[in-house]
Image 1 (cartoon, rainbow, N blue to C red):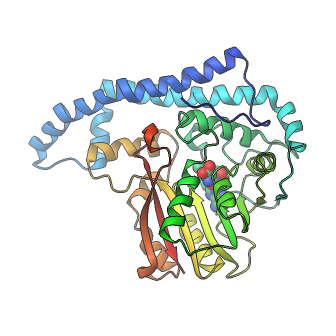
Image 2: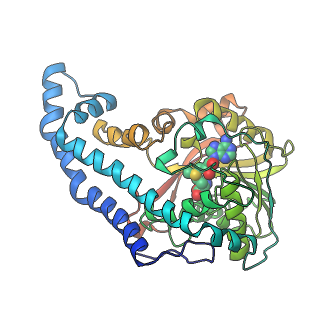
Image 3: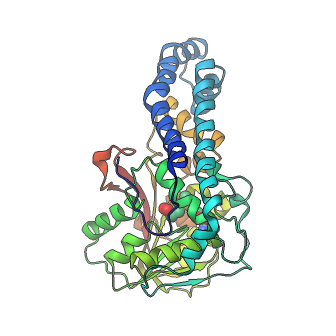
Amino acid sequence: MEQQYRHSLLVRENHDEEAREVFAMDLAGHLAKDVFPGTRTLYKARIEPAFTRQRDRAPTRTEARHALLRQPYYQMWSSLKRTDQEILFDAVGEVVEHQLADITTRSKKPKGRAGGSLTLDPKIKPPRYLTAVDIHCMPGNYTADLGKDDVSAGAIFDRGLFLYGRGGLGPLSDDMGASVCVWLRKAHHKFNPSVILDMGCSIGGNTLPFARTFSKATVHAIDVGAGVLRYGHARSEELGVPIHFSQQDAEHTSFADGSVDLIVSHLLGHETSLSGYRNIMRECHRLLRPGGMMLHTETEWSTETDPFNQSVLDWETHYNAEPFKTKLDTLDSAEVAREAGFSAEKAFVERAPSLRAGTKYYQGRWVIFGAIK
Ligand SMILES: C[S@@+](CC[C@H](N)C(=O)[O-])C[C@H]1O[C@@H](n2cnc3c(N)ncnc32)[C@H](O)[C@@H]1O
């Protein structure tokens, strides 16, 4: 496995701390590779035939999940998977907690100067969908803010995301953004944005490829979490990429009408709510100049038709604190965009092949929901 890029803000684990992190990561791999396949066998050999015999039809995704939940083997897999997720974030959270003073000091004096900026607004109130649960068991969620200079949410996200993805997103966890940039260059080679906005940027991992690819553009990145933004700003400065981070709610930003050429987001939609998602689409329509483009990238889910596979995807919704995942998966985003003002003919769904497809991460491609204004 490739190692994470060790920039100066990243936590520095001792031997035991690293062993704990790696244990949680390897257990996730073992559960996926060696334990999970048994749940499919159980479903195909027993649950589906019994259900079909009784009802004369195949189960729906919800019926499949409910039937699986009654099986001890599935309960074991589910319980281990959830526990492992908690162990992983506990392990990372503890290291960050021990080192917070040092990481904070380092974040205040980034090793480089790239010319980006950081604007925080303490009046921003995080939407309820970001505070009601700790999304995917990340302690404190993205919006934890322990004080004036706190970067703990960013530090946990940076290391946690890398381990959670088992390194599949690359040393800088930027594969989504990098892959979308390559796709964009090929599919719309004449499109040359001057102003780019990344919504729900967290620490800006996926903002970096856009700033690098369109090096003449002014790149803005917004999030509601102050801790992720402080960390992201320092990280980008050290990496030599100028990005203007600001604390804003993507549902209602402070940018002027028609002032943006390209709006992107990565893994934002599935962590919102229906009204939040609709507001974000409306905001994209307001912000884009005519001819401007929005690209919202997620993992490939909505094309799944097998009820067993769908029920496994729904596991994330119900047991990994990702409450909007199933809804987004089944939502007609083109209709939401149309309601927001985009014309139906100019909305599209595209796939960007992952630049790391060889690592077999997910299905080797990312799904973009986009529209041109
Ligand atoms: C899964 S993370 C993805 C982070 C980043 N885009 C990436 O790919 O690494 C989702 C991010 O969206 C942010 N977010 C969710 N709803 C938001 C909203 N309404 N306004 C701004 N940020 C939001 C969260 O705080 C979180 O940092």
